[in-house]
Length: 333
Image (cartoon, rainbow, N blue to C red; front, side, top):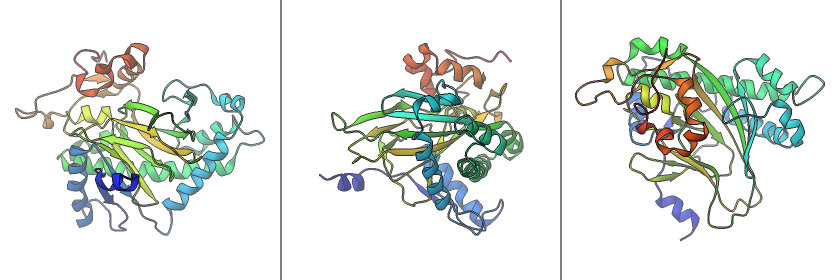
């Protein structure tokens, strides 16, 4: 069976269109999307989203500009890339944990000053204004979309009174990634191991090269292929899975490299992170006889550090959300 036939037979992510100019809280289009989001997140823990193009922002063009900037970034010499700082997993700076994968992490991408400071460590003589503007503009578009989706999720669960507190409790981390074009030894080569994200939510975008696979609540693996050239993938992370008392699925996912025909895979993601000191605790409205409390309150930073420690990486019970806490983390705050 050919790869195109296999793709047609495999499950697909739900597709949700956010391009309407009438998409405002309380409007019919807003209310019609909320049950679509909730249903997608309960079964898949993720969905494909199209933002469309309006008169002020063209997400499709902006994506192309960002990917052009990423090629320029990753083509820099290794010693130059390391000047941004050598990163631990999902921290600020450069990381290259395996021969196929390398990435850069940037904190506070909504601040142009912060992005420019990052670029000045890599490009002398004033940095790289084009790169800075592309990253900052994309972060602005995606972070606004993140707040829209999270507001809709909370409304769908009747948690309107928590919206302002929840939206103000987070910050953003922007990560750009490159997977080298390789000829694998077997049918597949793992570019990024199976994992769940630790964030509240992650919004991903990739170039035309595939490889992202996500596992549904039923255990099926979906091989993602964008429906639209301006698509994003919205993923639930551990923190929101716990905050909603397990009411939404947190999908395992991975990047699998196949025969890429000498094309490298570029992608970027915006990670919605709880601010320092924030304690993850399910609202009382989501706890009842049918849905008893599944997780003890825990400090996000404490869990994040443990999950990426040597013992955490080896212990699936730490990385797989349904197994933590009570065994590993309780808040001391």
